[in-house]
Image 1: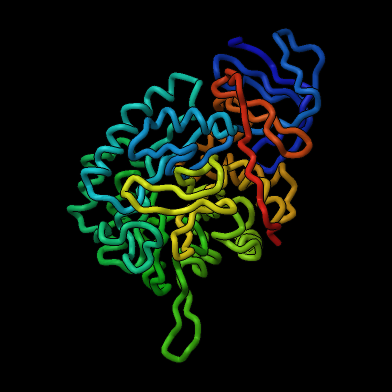
Image 2 (image 1 turned 180 degrees about the vertical axis):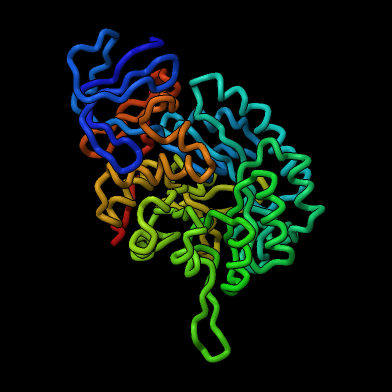
Length: 402
């Protein structure tokens, strides 16, 4: 069907609004959002009282389902994510040598155009270079010996070699050339995030002044800074909670990367409009618990929804975005029609795509998720086409998170 209407549903618009109504689709785009009507002169899809939201958007995907963007086709990964209701995704890379990063960028660039014209995979938005411009001491499970200082030449490498596919780059405040690198990337139209840093607030503010707009995975890889007098000093998160030039805050809502109290603190300080839930999904996301080996030969294990090193350090999450969404609602008590923007409109807006994605509004992509009363995904559409086999890959948490 090129033109049809989804009816008999409650609409979670994506910007906090809730209304009963119908959505009219024409040639893969939303043509109209209407109040309930029995007189639509077109094919009807009756959703029998379910809730309808925009398709989900994950900005931090390293892999999943035992697949990695380092060795597997991005299309295979994107196809699995579509079955979750994730209709758009941004792949993420850590600290790797330039030849490896260049190769990933070339592969993702080749297939991104395919996902803009087909509807059987999640739409690939681009690549988030979380590395190599990190503070080495705070690289977490990333390979710190591949970190680099963001000199003009190194930033030029990004712009000249992979500028057509890179949508977001991390610059850790406190490393040499931090603010100048931010300005150089922003001038080229690339979104800049900050993470993996315990820099003092002065350096953080310098990066904000230069154009940083996103805080990456809040409360991770930053143990804080204690001054000479023994008093805690403000760093990334403290500045982000107060300075609205930092427009969006990424949160991993698995209960382990960020304590539920810290999630609620971000919500209290900045409001739901600033929060983007991300998965930081490792290759074992969507797979059973147990040991696994990454592409660089290191051994980790998946347990209780996260990846861990042998020493117990976190190395990415293994929960999937619908689970993060349900956790966020449980942590905060927000109703789903408000919380839904953390996985739809906010991520789209962080990349400047809020009129195209993440919203039920005329002209936006006809990407939809239908939810039952238990917040389980039952039906998924991408570009106006319903996929045949949606699946939520439900994770089983063995321990209740407070």
